[in-house]
Image 1 (cartoon, rainbow, N blue to C red):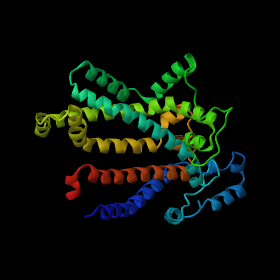
Image 2: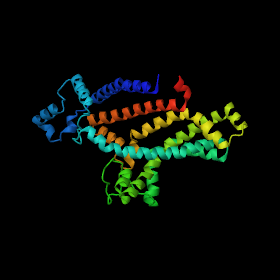
Image 3: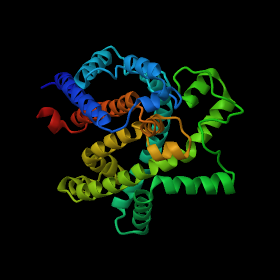
Image 4: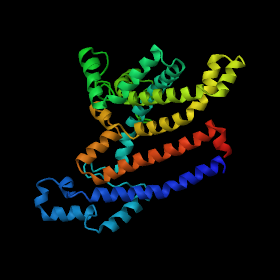
Length: 339
């Protein structure tokens, strides 16, 4: 099966998976024993029978659940995710407004995790048992064990409140204001428009949340890289490459690292999907207007359309990343491509 055929097959398999996810979400959100009218209407309107009747008809709450689900599927095929009970905006519009913030934070966190995690793992494996290896283990242990809600508050207290080295929560300084929107990514839009004050402000606001969000991924990458590299470095073909007089850096980077990437690709792909789905605690602590924060506020307000829309977006992100990882396997490992 060619790469294109495999890609098409995987994309087609996403359709029944997506339908199953929508059904599960619909059932879960509707078995909660709470009246959604309490969210839609004000406390005074709840005493008005006419207001209750109008809201029930408007939101389709008077229809049987199977009919509500079919209507939801029909609207979904047209790109309509419903209307938020709380914001009264189309859910698709809300997600469009919140998604760029999550993308920007996820990319920066991912770059931070890979740039530091991969070299740390390689060094720890090459110098196994050394002081550098022990330092890497400590960094990985701290990153994997410290919860983001604690480390986020701690880093804000130290670097923002005490030392004043970094800006506080938010995406940009309120006195500067958001740059003219092109992509929704403040750093990129600022560069496109030549707005350097907005660029430096938005970039500086990314530092602390990116470190907190990316630290756990950094720890995973360094540990998996170390274990994979240790296994590969003990193989016969590595000893053969060294015996032929190949430079050590090419033995490590060309022979060892490429073969150690297979398990790492899966981890990195799932980690990036997790970042893209919105880190709830990090976005909440740093007042970051992303998907994670939107999902939490929707759940707190029992906003069924917003909950299902945000969760469905997260599920689609995971499915697309899994497909990308599978395609990447065939590029990295010729054996998979030939099979």
